[in-house]
Length: 338
Image: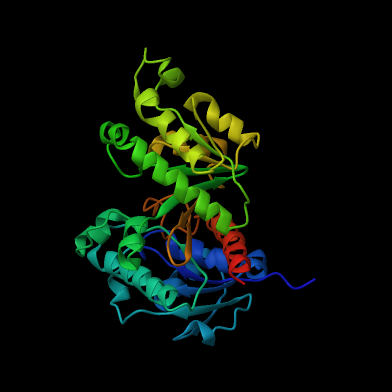
């Protein structure tokens, strides 16, 4: 039996004023990470050394200019820097323009490497939306930045939490707008794209369930008509294209059914519909993957936690989980391409 492929994985350090550096250091010291992938960090050596100090960890850092130079050894952090920054001015737990610029630069470098085919995957530590806005970034977050800079037609967000794979019709959008956005055409295209991406990671004929929007699926129009006018037609159109699709299924039961393994994936109609279900099931093991890019991206599903940054108490459980899940899917994508 051939040895399992360990995908080359860039780890972006996130906002240097948040807990990103601490959870990056903690994650990189976990043997299971090195067993599943070949990780290196895109970040700041000075900030990583500061994070290791507050954690009470001893680390060895090797500066690299290219992933091919990395040794990928446990206990050693191979680090690629993106510039010469005034890191002494970075204060833990504060929104700062320089911190936002550094976090953005780390992302841009990961995209350059991904577009050049030098990496298989990117694992991202959290950024602060206000900080990146201060340095002129127009996109609201990671997903939008990656989609824009890779010129990808779509960037599908998927939550992985135990047996649940949850995709989203919309993400950062007011709820009133999100309800209108979940039209027949949008939902149908999402189902088509989900089917394509799941097949690319080895799921043959995946069963995709579409969530309902209204209580009890609108009860035949009594509590809303979106199921009748948009969701049922979208599911039927997907079936006509040969896609294994069911729904809409009322949102108050669909995630329980998914937890039991009844579907391969669920399409949530808006941000909180799926987030609440996954984070209630297991907050620390709810991780985010982004499909549709030239490479796969994974992320923790928590923020920069400025209130505890620099205190040495941040836990890397979610960062470890997100990178492990990411590595699994990246290895499956590689196997399909081989």
